[in-house]
Length: 230
Image (cartoon, rainbow, N blue to C red; front, side, top):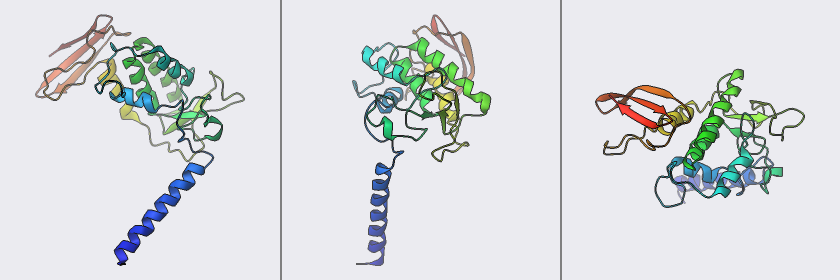
């Protein structure tokens, strides 16, 4: 056996052993259940439904929205429902009922929008801004206080689980504004630039200086939907 082969197998054994230890750890939140995996797929446009991108007009079964409701709180959300069978064994603030990875908030808002709950998605996105009174977004925020499992428990930048304050998921928050609320998501051919243009927006606003190809555009949003103009 060559030295290179020996090194390869040694690294492989170490990786397998590390994965086994992680899955047995008290804070491991890898169990399947009432979590955010399917929501992230819907937000990304896959959803596992028809093999194509879902839009706000493609309303999905109401039981999926009930699942989302289990996760949302007053100003934040939980990455896992307390009803999940793994909930009592998962303590990482980013992927457990004790808090959520900050990137889940814009992804969840995007998923809710595509599920048809446009007003609820926009309201949830706006409420989450309250945590920035402490500073920028971070890797995760956690619930604390005497009743951290309550719907109105206060939220702070996570102090547990080796979370990084400098990992702010900022691009994800901007992305959902661009491609969901304002519907700017050009196709490959560049012929269609807006998605859900006829869906009424729960807000009024303009997105200016949008660059596509060699031109600059302004996107207007209101209760009548979207309008694109040079």
